[in-house]
Picture (tube, rainbow, N blue to C red):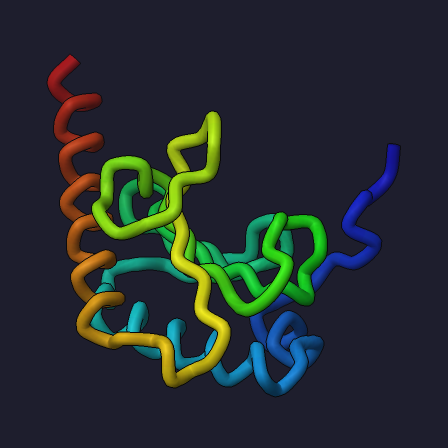
Length: 133
């Protein structure tokens, strides 16, 4: 069937080099906030975009220029269990929730930190529940 994405980035650097400047600025700022406030998270490419893992897949950054992700404009900051986090647009029939930023000025650092903290709590709760079984 082949790769429907038509591209496979080798690393985060390759991904960043391919972004238009307007998206790159937002992506870099979101990455900075995540890596600074969730230093235990590991950043890895999945679906050719940066995902952040703690115990499980926790969140991701998806720019509109990566066409296979249903983001038409801007840059989405998505959360794997976002349906359980307040203030996010929940993708129908999924647990995923997201917030889309159209400019770097729209990124409220304190709100992103709050979302990250909620996501880390959920990540830990899920881990604890699974271990208790």
